[in-house]
Every structure is written in structure tokens, then in C-alpha cells.
Image 1 (cartoon, one colour):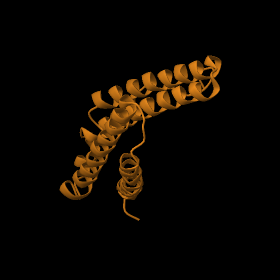
Image 2 (cartoon, helix red, strand yellow):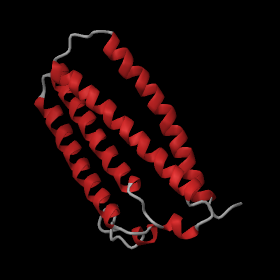
Image 3 (tube, helix red, strand yellow):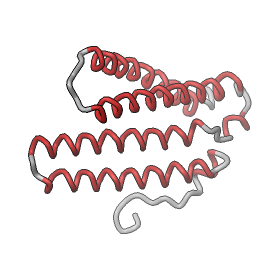
Length: 160
């Protein structure tokens, strides 16, 4: 087994899976716009913005796979360096998830008419957004993948 299997193999699988899911989402975006729903303009713009964000994210991770697997093929020091699509991917996924979660919280509010359900969901979404952005910025500031292991990020209760 190659020493790159755990890194490049995981990246390749992630890019293939993302590309497949991007295709599924693209079909959904296109069918939404062809159905001519009478949704408010802000919903249509939100969906269009999510499509643009998803497209840019897919392009970024395909580029990242290209750099690591083709341009830096066999170059161990090239694999250690963090290139810009790596942290940007985390930041974009965090942003996209936040927008979708807020929209779903809004839809839950419309369906249930209960703020006691929708507001905690929106607050939890905001907490996840802040945490995700914090991690994304920390990764962006790291110069190598080895530096990521030195980040003092603890997950769990009571410091465990």
C-alpha cells in the first residue's frame, strides 16, 4: 500500500462523492427554476446563491485534488503544504450549511408557528457557523498539515 493512500485516496473519494452529489443538486436547482414556483424573490435568490456557492466549492476541491495528485505527484513536501482550497472548503461548507439551516429554521417556524422550536434551531445554527468559521480560519493560518495537529482544539465534555 502506498504511503499516500490515506491522504490522496481519501481526497479522491471525497472529490468523486462531492462531484456526484453536485450533479444531483444541479438537477434539483434546474428543476426548481423550471417549475416556476411562486416563491418570494429572496428565496429564489437564496437558492441561486447556494448554487453558485456549491459550484465554486466543487471547482475548488477539484483543483485541490489536481494540485495534490497531479502537479505535486511524488513530491512529499508538496503534500504537506496547505493550499488555499483546503481551508476555503471548510469555510464554504460552513457558510452553505448555515444558510440552509437558517432557511430550514424559517420553514419550521412557518409550519409550526412556534418560536420555541425555530429560535433554538437558529441559535444552534449560529453556534455551528461560528465554530466552523473559527476552525476554517485556524486551518487557513496553518502553513502545513503537520501544524494542524498542534492546534489546541478539544472536543468533548470536561476537557476530555
